[in-house]
Length: 290
Image (cartoon, rainbow, N blue to C red; front, side, top):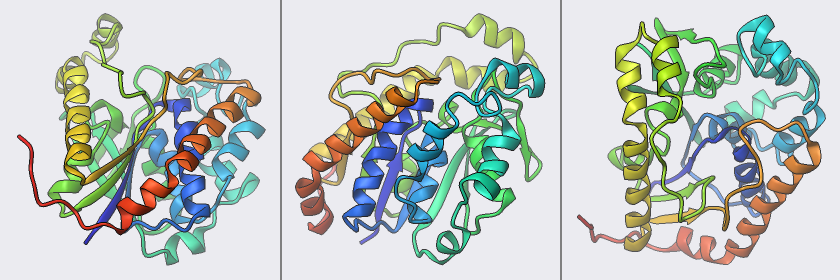
């Protein structure tokens, strides 16, 4: 029986997920595969490297550093989140990423990106923690309009959340019978059409397939959530999500608010811990729901 962990993105809402996965790591909850999108990839990689507390630690430490996330970085480099500083200087020098543990861990780690020429998702497995791996994570978290596309394997890539925000279907298609899904929006959330499509069409007019995907994103996202909750009703998906909308935007410079959202994730995970353990130890349901 293969078990998967699916981590939605959401930029700084991902600190909720960081709190959730730290509790799961502390409790020794193990998965065969983790798949992360955007912030879910950027913070979720610490699960494979076994680094409890690392995501919240470096976010709080560099919250007000212009090299980390700032208009200065956007104007200077084309990236709101500094590409070199966030994805190379921090893991290689300032808050070391445990490459050996990442490599030795049996858990597989996938990131989701979006090919801007086709508008389709790209699923990439990272086995070795090196600068190429960090670039795949950067690509997964590169939000349109405030990031430059990342060129990898001959493709131009942006945020995986554009094309597959909650890749549960991908996991199911690859034989994962039981999945834990961590969402960064509450159960009541319904995504609306993008409010900035006019600006996106102007800035990304060279990529019509990408624009088509963006125009349909709210429908695809809501469809993915329906699949998640249908799986929960069937007993094959365990959902962890905030009780209310998280008190944080896509960008945050206040370390205390970062910590507050992280603690919300920890609190929900701790509250649901016994139910999670029961789910992990149970047999998957054989029933399906149309």
